[in-house]
Amino acid sequence: MAATTKPFDNRDGSIWLDGKLVPWREANVHVLTHALHYASCVFEGERIYSGRIFKLREHSQRLIDSARILGFEIPWTLEQIEAASNETVKAAGILDGYVRPVAWRGPEQMGVAAQLTKVHMAIAVWDDWKDYFSPEARLKGIRMSISKWARPAPNTAPTAAKAAGLYMICTMSKHAAEAEGFDDALMLDYRGQIAEATGANIFFGIDGELHTPTPDCFLDGITRRAVIGLANARQIKVIERPMMPSEMGRAQEVFVTGTAAEIAPVTQIAEHKYPVGPIAKQLMADFDKLVRA
Image 1: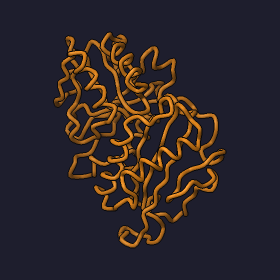
Image 2 (image 1 turned 90 degrees about the vertical axis):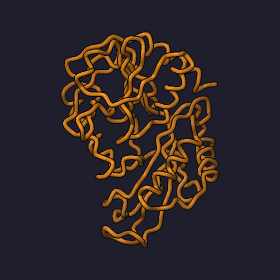
Image 3 (image 1 turned 60 degrees about the vertical axis):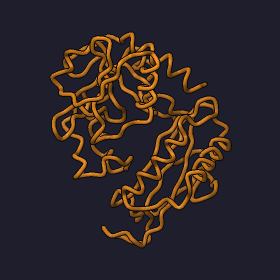
Image 4 (image 1 turned 180 degrees about the vertical axis):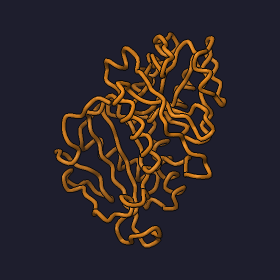
């Protein structure tokens, strides 16, 4: 990921916290916050294009749904979350940037049980995290290793939630990939099937069609669904199905999709190499038009 230029705890501006905008440096939590110890936290990643949050309704609803999967209710409605998100963007004066809503259990109770905790929520906005991968990497295509960590089964983790704890193995996988000179890592699932990248969904171009893993133990990304819609509009057939690593050699092109990654071509996965293909190029152009429509 492109390095940020400023630490996130020492910035000017405001963060929306529990119903009001507060100075950035004062948006803090206690060290005994339940979420810090037991991962009772959900979040979203959203992009601002030309002053507008892309797919705000879908992201806000997923935040609420993720919290419910983890067993807590966010004390703000969908409409209030949307209004707070837009208020924070307006206060920041940012036309193109990133939005991070997050909700978590507080410090009122310590231990596995957390029925007495208060649910908190914050929304932060910034403009110097424009690319999950560097512009150079996206232009040339990213290189991926294969992670040793597997996406867990739905009966062992809340895989339908965008929950903080599920990203621990993503961080470990991406760090290991970067240490080996790669940009990211492909994650398999508990069955050994292809799942996703550490923070993005993946598509394989095979004989003019797009094949993508069925999201039954990882998130069906909002950008993923948007890209499938763009492909359908181009009459490019999209097939969602279980995929095995042995199939990677059949692909003529590969790309990943996500809020931060947008659409990023993949030119290598382990020993397999691919060109930046025509489907990825077309969908990248279509996506750029969509987000600024």
